[in-house]
Image (cartoon, rainbow, N blue to C red; front, side, top):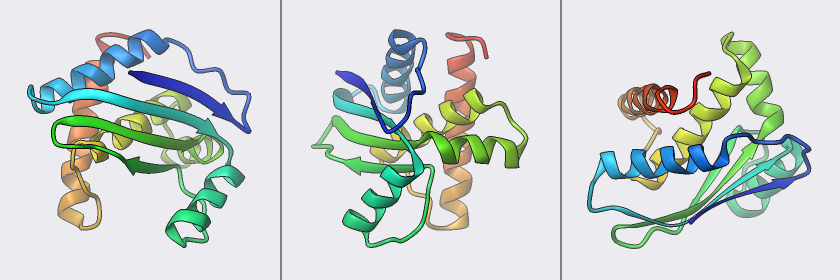
Length: 144
């Protein structure tokens, strides 16, 4: 089950049913043996993400997403804590539409749950390819 929440932001995410379908497809395409457990997509503000970053990761900086992985074997579960503030500023910095950047960040979190890492340049490159493939799939579901 995929659930969507707001914490400290009034941003209204549209197309939730289609987004959930997309996330299921991304998971299935990555590995047909995987299935969705519970994924919570929490849209929040910078301060909320900063507090989580400090409390759970001992990091004192803003970020666009923090992914908490609760996966067990082939059951994909976790929390995606997404800062709408940072996604907006990153969209401006990268000169892409806000909604595209938001969808990329959601894909990024799901890919982390699927085992993708982004610590090295090679891992970042693999992650970017997988994000792009996920966005191509999403564009066939929700034009943006």
